[in-house]
Length: 376
Ligand SMILES: [Zn+2]
Image (cartoon, rainbow, N blue to C red):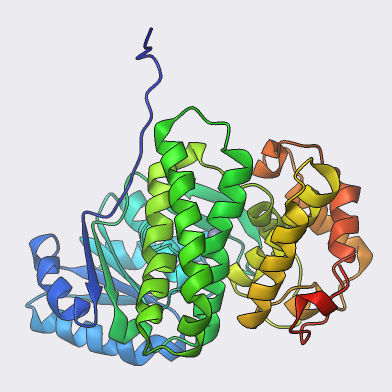
């Protein structure tokens, strides 16, 4: 007998998605249909010229745009400041143009002010331009919580010409974040009876295969067809999988490990996907040691080899935490294992000490290119 008592709500996709080398030229025509006074939000100096061009062209469309910049992170202080600027200028939409933090902040402010958001990712480092979810951090970048939003952005413009300006490192980071969907969802959601969740997990497997096939060429050559497939897989398809899977298609260990590590001070700033990629290695190591999955060891070797080819960090040393004390690594483990963490949904028990030992055991040299040489 069917039950109608449980309702699932999914925000699956932006209403309009423009993608391609002329996406901005076409997509911008849709903005005046929903907004007259957009707030253009950005952050880094590296993207300031692009944002200046977007701002000028918004004017040319007959709009009255205002501008704001993220100072620290997608943190409450910045969110309040952006809200204030938006209200002062009577803005009726937020256009977020930048990386994951800018996109998350723009979506969240728009959600709080009940105005539409428009996302223009300027790298393929995350799928934040797509999803109805924002991560909130401290001003120093320490993860605090994630926040579900009422809907996905109204319009997403993924302009290849703009995204090609981003450093290759951001694409590598996006690839690590993209393949995490499979490793995490297949571990914790494979017992789900929900068809949407099952289909999301299958899509995550196809996404992983595509990234394994095309990822290295895309990383090495941004003019290749592989680059188009891979950047769209990381920035768009990964978000679609999150939309279909919804809250029931959860993360496992890699993202909670990321959240724990963001509590620490890095010697060089690490990108979201770089930390998640390292978290995946730890997750597979935990599966190898403490679950009955006999394939975890092979999967870990395959993953390390792939991350190496993308020049991604594969140890706490190469991640920028070589000088971090044992006490601080233990603090990160404590955060990862806290009672609200999805780490607790792992299908086998892992204590803080077990997690700590696994992290410390990954003293791998980054320059090793062949996994057969790596001591793991
Ligand atoms: Zn992620």
